[in-house]
Image (tube, rainbow, N blue to C red; front, side):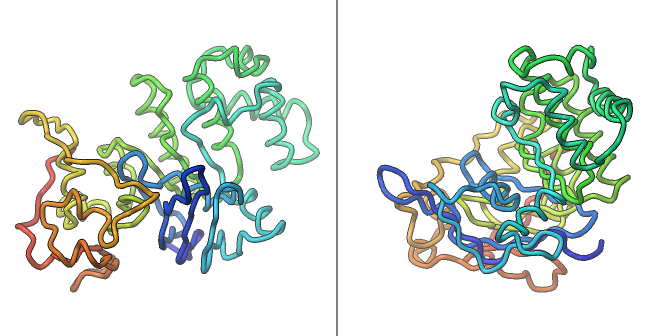
Length: 332
């Protein structure tokens, strides 16, 4: 691992809505090193996509209210026109919904060509065509010639997502942000696409931020993991360490709720729902659902602190000292 290619310090994000202001991200910090594969997991609505959009400088000022102490990509701030150019140069993003990622009025060839011309200016038509064909074939796209001559609406959801993935992979960037990249794909291609992304990251020494509800995939691909709940990081550390020995009660519940290949019945999941961002709990945001919660949990928000004796393990919980024996996950 090398220097940090992404640094976020004290990020807060709020959204103005009709009912008031949603306090989605109260205070969040994370980093990604050069060549590192980082996972970001949590329930739907935990704020994962908001963090990714802030990292890619595509979170608009309205209705979002973004405040931060520091947000750097490849050592440069993302603020201002120059900062946004730095983000576009160094970050590729694969969105969850391909329908909102592609321009419906332009053919696929035109959209892919725009990217290639910005990355490799003044090349021949043959060079661009070969690059586009290679990118589409790398994601097992059927009839790539026809796809290039098609509008997004003429393609299925899975084909549109494969186009988005191929466009992200063919860019010469240092960071790939993948927000549920295989949501629209069928199971026969899902594993292949994830392996393709993983192979490219390793080969090109790129950094990867992967958001996924498939915890087995996250465990297999990522080096380090951030666990998010209600807009906050509740646990972070090496992926293997967290899966083998989770400490935060939310992490334990999240892993236990995942179906195991070994069977052993159906998990109950975590009781309750993520709190309203309009009026989040005063103390720990997980306290209303936590089996360990005490009075201090309801009154005072815990701080993400480094665990004693660990190298890079952080947990945000008041009651770690009274926790049960470590839960060893059988997830494979």
